[in-house]
Length: 579
Image (cartoon, rainbow, N blue to C red; front, top):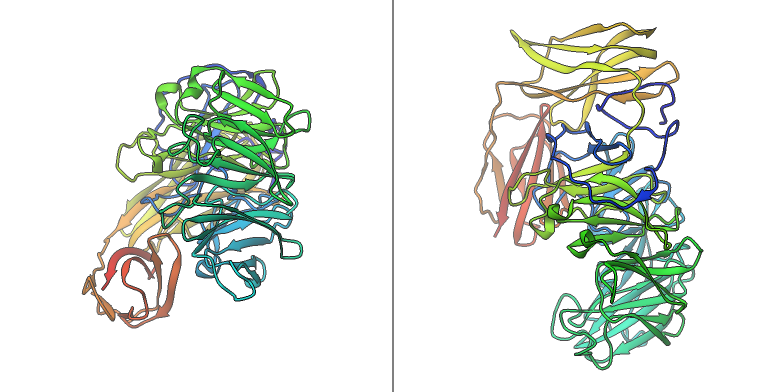
């Protein structure tokens, strides 16, 4: 949905089709800003401290540290046409409404990576060695191949990982590089996804070391965007130019098809990503260098370019070049608020040009709270995490930053909701309307899943102040969230802020906890309820639809789980231990 004829204030969605898509190109400058009040779910605040106003929209209710949020700045949450996005390998969300539209079969796929060429396709690269794909539209999983240490005897690797964690598929969905553990040795395995053939295996003796979950001496392995190169960043906590591991250190480059060593890009590795410079050459962009705080290194060996020497980039931050459809830019965060806490797109040439995408407003006092910004494939939106100034240990939300749109229905007063006996009175005020057809009043019990309960017809076009009212005569028992969906004559729509009213909230408890075979809900009600059980990585491991208050858990492995119970328009989240 694209908006060309309305002007919303800072409430709801931001659309870019009729205005500036990217921030203004300027020389970098240190800009500080005070943290605004946390916007309501699906509402926005405007960061007008930067050269181009940036709309910062909150797209998650809350994350307790494991879900929901995106994974990392180098793992693309959006699909290739940015119509949907995923959080880890759990949920699929509509990119316009930010509503959950499906659950991934996480146990069959994890970890997952979007195809760079097919918006309906996810790749699943499992640690067991299985290579799978998933069709979102058809909800089907296809197994393609299995990677063995010894194919003749079908001997598996001890562990197989993409990256680990920072690897990527090339932009054409052809090559991908894995690391395989066999005792203390590490293999780099290059796979051709187009025919599922292993192109090359290269063994680095002792490089895995004694760590069970990740290589001890290697930080990551990844193919470049073209697929012509494989990069290895050696673990700078273990190796350096002064203390190399068997002669390996820094960021090294290899030929994809035979893993022939080509050159060392940098003597020391830091947060970075592969991309394309403005001149069309492939580069590696990272923090730190002999001079400069952000550098790019040409993969063809033609040298290094200092992108910035500003001290703001000397602290902790992340770099993403996942904007595959917008080459020539790298998206960079400065995690430390003391260094201005900005998110910028940096032009990959020697011009010093950046685009300020606003501030992340995160205290970033733990790695969990690091913003880890990642752009859409077109680079016009940036997803990032933030605690928005809340020092709570695990408090984080997810936001979407875009250029702020010009404003079309001007909301003089936001939506308010007040109890009126056993009903709820809703009130909102606008100053102008252009091609405004109607308002749809929507209600939710959890602040996420909304349903229409009433339609208020609008006046088409006017420029005077006008107050609108609605009355909910049958509110939910418990929590009631309200928002207004404004619809144009041409079908385009937008949302207001969210207002909240509570009626007679009730608690729901579970017992026993810990449990071995069954958990019981402490309620006499035999009502239809949806029960979703997640593990601590956010994977949906069990789903039930029943009236019974007895929930079987004997088939679950021992561990800690979260149970979401949906009943009578109410949502409950309970933590339990399976012994």
